[in-house]
Image (tube, rainbow, N blue to C red; front, side, top):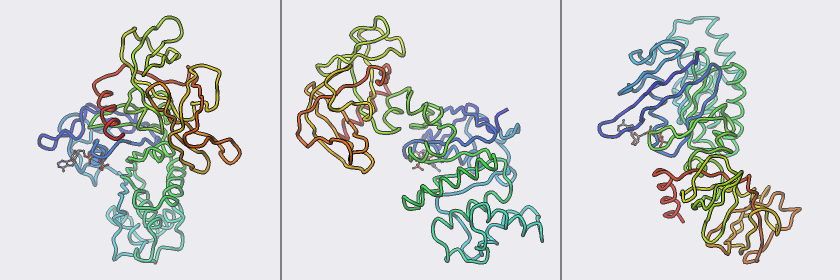
Length: 369
Ligand code: ATP
């Protein structure tokens, strides 16, 4: 049985639907990320799991117990917030001990568990410090120790890394993942950062405007997006719209601008259907004049990022394609305005039938362009 079961849960604030008929199971020991843009309902979902908000409809089960009417303090849940929420006038040890005190754990046992939790997060010896004497990363590890010391059945983290600088975010997310795996603790992690979600999760639940769009392992979500929104939200990609011209055999042909893309068939589609296509920059073979889907164009933009140089080619067919050159120090990188040719493997193009929600995504992309 799953540790967490969210069954047909809807949350309304007046006329605002913050979460719309959500169904999601989280297995024992699994780390799942709720990922999506601001306002999509991630925090509200987490707050319902914690018991700070009541579901308007539906059921939340944790470890086989219906939680809808169980108050937060009786749910045995550890929570870490974005802003640390440590008590500024208490020492680190007293902050960590707080939950144990409330649960009637005293004396040597309490001290032992506090030390154990501090060691787990790499803060042994910091117990007597005051929060004002700690860095942001250390404060967040105190918050994590405080959540873990009560040995919760579930750990909830709400954007725990967003107040930290980029390097610290990477190092603390690694620590959180290692601790989560070591303790085999069922974890729900809220973030709007797709790289963070990819790096830390067993599965990602992608949300958009109160709805769950797709759940899957990080590479499933990246490689087999089921909607234009998920394709575009996870990683860099070029999104194109086109019309299916033929769909016989193993391939379909999709007209975009004045180009006919040959695309490996994944799902059945009928000629005349409007589809979205996603082409990852690393799948555009720059400089290739042979192979499938050979196009010509002009380099319009270049972005040296160190490990890769990313750029955009304005094709001669009425659309642009992002491309990427790996290891640019040792590879030929084109110049701006250079005329180039490129190809895209038919099996590298992901597509789906356009829905109203996909049209919205293209509307947003066009606004942003
Ligand atoms: P963010 O990443 O910005 O924190 P989120 O995905 O966590 O966003 P929520 O905070 O869950 O989104 O909010 C979902 C929707 O519900 C938003 O439209 C928000 O304005 C609304 N909402 C959240 N809390 C309340 C509240 N207490 N009263 C009214 N509306 C609310």
